[in-house]
Length: 274
Image (cartoon, rainbow, N blue to C red; front, side, top):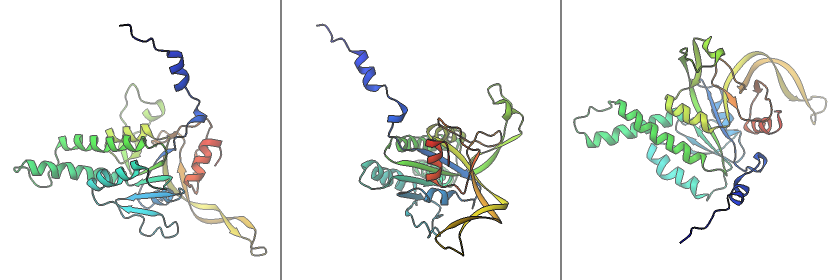
């Protein structure tokens, strides 16, 4: 019996698309030291649900986002992800506000599971194999979330400094640096999350003369820009020899976005201006 010949031209025509036709929402990775504004940036997304393992949203009363206070890895994998996958919600964005803490939850879950099997294992002992199992759990979750194309994903992480070793495949500018700032995650998970996101940004603050929008005293309906002494929050997105940063966009973005919000970042990606 002869097999039907496939029409590969028709298959290709149905599957080849233009980037403009993509309806996938953006994925954003943001990292910084503590208290630099990662959580606040995540809450700036419209229609966001914050998955919070650190209770970092407790005082975000101005933004007042919807928050799911995460207490365990099981809750994330058995309740939160199935809820998001069901599509029975109105959220446009999901913020994993603390992937560093979420990874620790996965590691604790792996360790506790093994302790139930191995009665000779010392309590709170972490084995090398535990990291491999935790990497599989967290990596799998990240890929599953990435597949939810109808919602935007914001992932935050703590920052760490690593030593940069000279290798043949390293960037020339990085080879001249002795260290680099990266998201505080195991190398395997850092590689996964950096590969699936569209923007990797580093939040930091600067002190000095900054621009501030205020209402005019003469005409309260008007907004004027004043130069004042203060602190400005910035999101560095441009490739940099000291930071693990970068973006996917057909436009050249500025090195950093002042007073960043998720809408301003997405506008910059799509239009080339913040």
